[in-house]
Length: 310
Image (cartoon, rainbow, N blue to C red; front, side):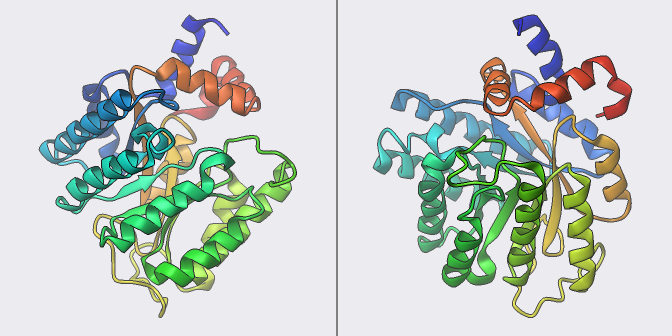
């Protein structure tokens, strides 16, 4: 796919190459009642010097969020901080950032990459909590067979302090460890949502699929949860700053804008994932390589842009 075309497409899904670009997008979408999680784009690094870049850039992100009074938290990839190159230094980098964010009551989400780092990513979150840094949560992928067991294990360790983003998962994982067809993936994701809600955890439902969103709304109603209500779950933790009443809906920048606006109008907390950075091309290409079905969405956006207004 020619770079010019990837660049044209990415304008919809990537805020830009600079932090200032991301700030402008968040300021615009704030008028629609959205809150945010911001991600500095970057794939697996090859040197600890790159890890230092990400740490310093995220420090700039925190400063920009505070200076511009934005309702945003952070999304980070542990591998970008050096976790696979030098675990001790990588953990030190992550802890430094999480501590800085904690000083501003800011939440940090550990993005989940493919199955090679699933266990490592979960362990980073558990280690941070053990250090008293409870402003950090993890992403789990509904498609993986192990995820329900991970939810149960995390519940036993963190109880209501657990804070998830649950998504179907973009990575095309081996069939030996994951569901590979659409319906089983959706069904498994919905089971994970139920398990997280029943565990008293905070649940960020990251999906653009109507079957997942509709299931979530029904699951919330059956538990007495919903917009403009206090979280009624007896096993839930205290209210979280700058978050919804035990749950929120999360969506990618540029995807299903009408759905997001409808949920926001109904009173649901809606969070938009805001990626930016010089690695926009690598990010876009890797997404296509990992999940070729995205190509269908790209073609639809190009040929029928009115069907998916941002």
